[in-house]
Amino acid sequence: MAARTARTRESGFTMVELMFALVVIAIFMTAIAMALTTAMKSNRNDTNRMAASNLAATLMDSARATNFETLKAQVDQDDPTTIDPSKTIVNGIQYTAKQTVKWVPSHGTIINCGVGTDARDIAYLRINIAVSWPNMNGIRPVTNSSLVAPPAGQYNEAQGAVASQVTDGAGAPQPGVTATLMQGTTVVGTQLSGDDGCVFFPFLLDGDYTMSVNKTGYVDMYGSDTPVSASTAVVAGPVTSIPPFIYDEAATIRATILPLDGSTVAAAPSAASVLPLRVVNSHIQPTGSMLVTGTGSVLNRTLGSLFPFDEGYSLWPGACINADPDTYLANPGDPSVREPTVTVAPGETSDVTLRLPSLIVKVVKSGVAQQNRQVRLVNVDTTCSTRTITYATTTKTAASTGQVVVSAPYGKWLVQASSSTGTFPSSGGTTVTLSPFNSIPAQTAIVTVTSS
Image (cartoon, rainbow, N blue to C red; front, side, top):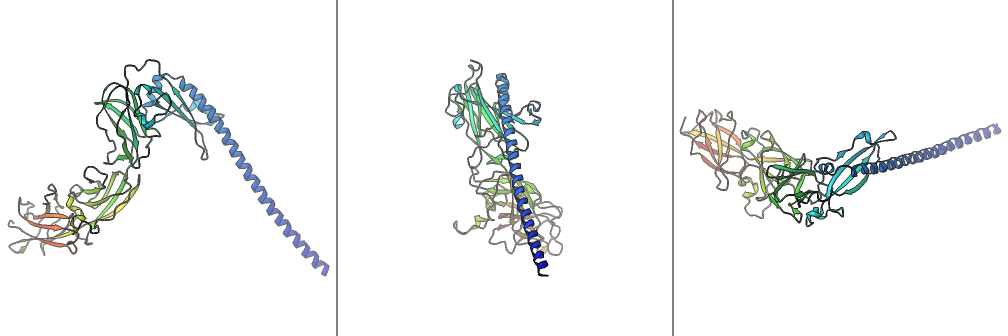
């Protein structure tokens, strides 16, 4: 009995050892398999990279043999030239080759976008070919660059040049932006900004030129998607500089406008056009702000084409400066009562809630409440051109009270009521001032009318 027990225990111990050994072997084999897989991938990547390098060299030889005028035309293309795919198949693998062409001086590098260089020196084309392939696993494309000189004496008759740069708000180069050079209404040429943000147009006749830039979804500091430079005189000799374009992917603000006092019955202005939003940032010249109507409904507005300033934007409803809530601070140093600054980012959408004060308008005639009267508000502040806030024709005073509740921006307003037929008087009404400090609860403006 004791012998059988010993053998049983010994048998069980041997099985545990066997299982442990199998696990160790499995781990070891897995490690070997992973190492082999990694080695195979590395070998395949090395093979592809070597093939891409040879292909780039072959394509460069072909490019250098291309007619100079054909190469020159590629400078003006909006996108890199994709080389015929039938010429980029190696060992059954479809490679992709893209070619770009830029003007450069004889030493191959344009410093400060060519400004200060003698235009006659910048007479060479730099060809760059980038080759990529499927499943690169983070490997950068193989590139090959070379300089090509024009035929001797080809451009002696024109020796001027223009250069500029496209940057983002932080001053970093903005590549891939289309620049168009014009003389009057004639397009002289177009090209993409390079990795350094530079654009360069050589061999120009003396005269005045303008430049514009464009890229879908991008804007300058004023919200223009195609900003145009001032006219610039070009003469033979040094490269003429056009001031840099500050240009970045547009930001969007989505604004929801609600009554200041939480009223659910206050009527909104009749259309977004009579309630633009003032967008404020100190970089916006010359006043530090601009009016934006945007898209959407009166109370749910989308403001696109905004430059993504790091500081963001302050904004409020209303066209006039006195719609600024901080206009009504007792002292300039008092805490701001504006809505918090909206942070924006290139290509992103930010949300903000804005507030409009409510106003109770009561219309009376000889002390008797009048029903079915429309109302309007006319801004009478001397710092603002006349702005009239109108409401839907269905927004009328109630039969029982002669009252209607409307919403409007902060400011000094002349409140007027219509006749029963909807005609407004040319003068008369009641003046009220709406501010953050007197609009909760809502004010009541009593408008006396004499007509039926």
